[in-house]
Length: 332
Image (cartoon, rainbow, N blue to C red):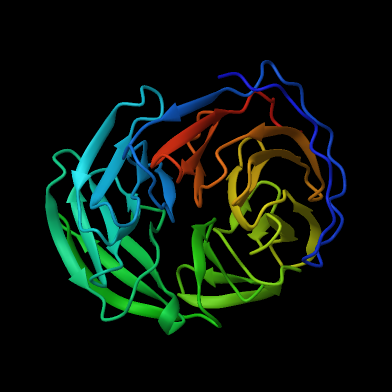
């Protein structure tokens, strides 16, 4: 279905956010196209959605359905893997998909080709999200909010074996996890937390203007910007890599759900619940301008980009996904 372009009106910042500033809106070669991607076939809750670059697939693990979906972002061909009902977050390297099982407090590994489970590791505490540390070093980080920590998991061998090799203390319950160059970013209590990857050490703790944190922080290394999410009004803040607050924006709705294309310098923001996706152009100084407002299903708690000019959203109303094309040129 094709969606007409609409200019998004700016709304008041109840989260003490800075003014959004301005950024020239790049040219659009078309209109956003919304494509529904059926998966589970009935309402289901997604708390994570991730495009794994090493695997080249979108990973969707709706919690409570005992299935994980591996979706080709171009053809939409989908592989279904049977998992535990507690599976809720996933990432992958070239050969293996890694998940967290929130029901049984475990990290699990599946062969990306066959879907066979190849490893399982108990954590002794309830995990939230899993991400592969970039760089090919064979390491996973798993957030454990109830313990204010991130667990470090070593991945070795073929098929993969898992071993907990350390943990990182976080000043608060970590919310989300995103990697930039040399750093990981999480959120806690209205702050962005920056962690040095090599030293496994917190190196920054910065206020965002959000009353409370929500979602996965996003990073633009080219512009040296960090994006933080709020737990109300679909709000988000933009900070420098050193933690200076620059700008803010509210997309409306409730919990902020964030995705970012660092090649195009485009920010995708929605509130959940909330019926629109805000497509924002971002400039080097952190200034943002709305390129379009796209109608989307009212409930969906996760999003990602696929590196092909599309943003993906979870659709809790159908237990599926929504792919939205971005027709705008890169922000200069």
